[in-house]
Every structure is written in structure tokens, then in C-alpha cells.
Image (cartoon, rainbow, N blue to C red):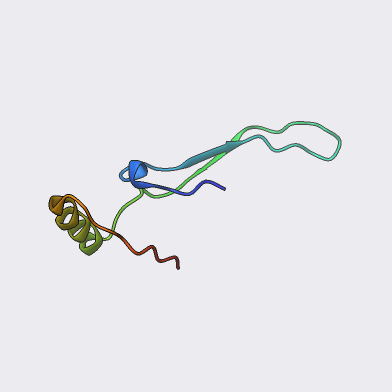
Length: 63
């Protein structure tokens, strides 16, 4: 599974796949995409402030 990272901010993630029936016949390629990847404004502000310090530790939280 792909996990978005900071390099993805502002971009959409796109998946393109070709469905295949049980008998092996391929269908037309189908795609799905996300909204542009974004960062919460308060998180972005905090990261910028921490980067100005030159060295910092971040606590990772998963939801």
C-alpha cells in the first residue's frame, strides 16, 4: 500500500487498472484519483517554525 509523503503535497494520487474477468478477458482500463494531497495549515505552520530552528524531533501520530 502506498503512503503519501511530503513530496506528494499538491499532487493527486492516481491508480489505473485493467479489470480482468474470470475467463481472462480484459476490460477497458479504469482510473481513480484522490483530491490534491494537502497539509493542515496549523501543521504546515508548525513544521516551518521547527525547520527554522535547524534541529527538532517530531512525534508521529496515526489516525
